[in-house]
Amino acid sequence: DTSIIDMNSEWPANNDVGCPPSNKSVACPLPSEHAGVAPMASSSTLGRHLARRLVEVGISDVFSVPGDFNLTLLDHLLAEPGLNLIGCC
Image (cartoon, rainbow, N blue to C red):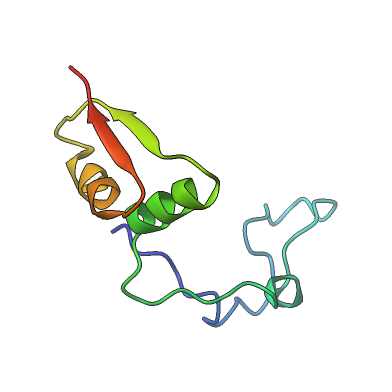
């Protein structure tokens, strides 16, 4: 599943999101640190997010080699206005 989680979803009770339980010296993200992050629609996918971010950072051309495992990602890149997908073999 390539769906991106909603940042407004409920956090675990212990707030150890992404941190090893035995290592308390690692700074763990807390919900307050994500207050400025815009929530994503539940229909967003990782491929759509990556395509949007590529355009946002100024990428206009993407070179790709189509294959069985990346066709879904390539579909999202093709659908993004502002991205020119250049197929290679």
